[in-house]
Length: 173
Image (tube, rainbow, N blue to C red):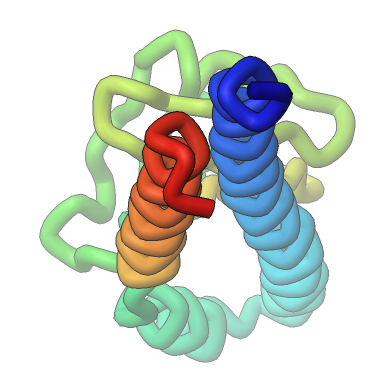
């Protein structure tokens, strides 16, 4: 009798705990990526500052091109103070002028800035340079398999808890 009264509540609490834990894990994984991206962009920004001072544009363009090929990078570019792309991970975009709200925010930033751009699914890290700004757009694409596995594990755990709850309700335990 007590089991039948406790079963629905225990089932609900168990499912709720599994779902909350899954969301927390997913959120923490995303935050870890963002922390990594901050360090990554600031390191590239330090390299860019050194290359600008030493007038090593070719070396900088090569490094930007390498970064742009990474799976977690949607784009990487260096804007001059007017918003024109001096160097772009996609060479066809070099010389283009960027005037979006995100570009303006990046150009006005006095320190490293993180901007979420939901329309294109990008987290942008902007690093101010001596003359302009480095903009790196990162994507969570590499995290997709982890997200799917986490969702599958959560659904499986909920199904197991639901089955256990049903067994308790029917008195089979």
